[in-house]
Length: 68
Image (cartoon, rainbow, N blue to C red; front, side, top):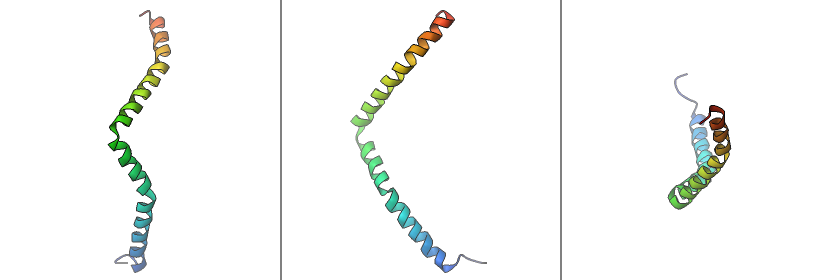
């Protein structure tokens, strides 16, 4: 078998078209989010605050155990 069957070419193009159409909303949302740096900064700040709130009691317990 030297090459792909002729129908495979059409299938690949159709598959690519479906994939692009399916992923287009995700791509648009990623572009929108990346353009909104204030939103990204706010999410990062909020996430850091949540992480700190979760880690603080654990770190305090560790410090109490090691006598720090």
